[in-house]
Image (cartoon, rainbow, N blue to C red):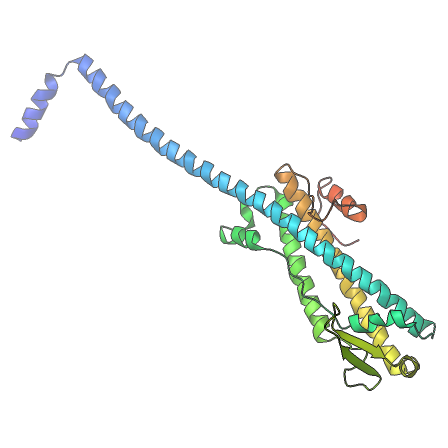
Length: 270
């Protein structure tokens, strides 16, 4: 009680002007604390925004590399399939025995290379909170669509590889192999065309294998389109154009990039 009495007496000796100064000092301290909290929060938000922008920039670089790799694989696949289609058409549809240079198609029909693209930045974004950190809905959808399409295409490629139809087995006496280390491809196949061309079992296997390769080639084309949509839209978000390292987009690829940054829609196969 004595303590409270002494405190009360002390307050009675404080003049009005001193109360005003004390109030201002208190408000100043409170304001300083609030400003410090606000500055810390602003700095944290600003740092997080910079990190998101930096990841988006690196995602764009990764997308350009992805387009470069997938476009190269697609063009190689289409070139191979064109030869295979000509071979199958001559052998199966027209009943002709294709000339010797075309028999390279028999070697390529069992081939289903892995589909692989860089994804470290995408995985980093997913680990940092997911695609929700990408503010633009259409950019986010394009990235999500591409990676779902990639997983689906990889699965289909693995399925066709596991279930592939080999036109001819390595132990078939109608094919012989040489091994020449001086060649880019050391295994050289030599086919007994006179024995194989009239064989309907061989023709059936060629037809089936060619059809499967044709399907996979179409999946490659769809995947490239999805990659271009992603690249173009992520690029637009960082104010850059999608320019793969192997050369500018042309033809249908350029049209896809233009469509991606025009009316916003999820890329679909033509």
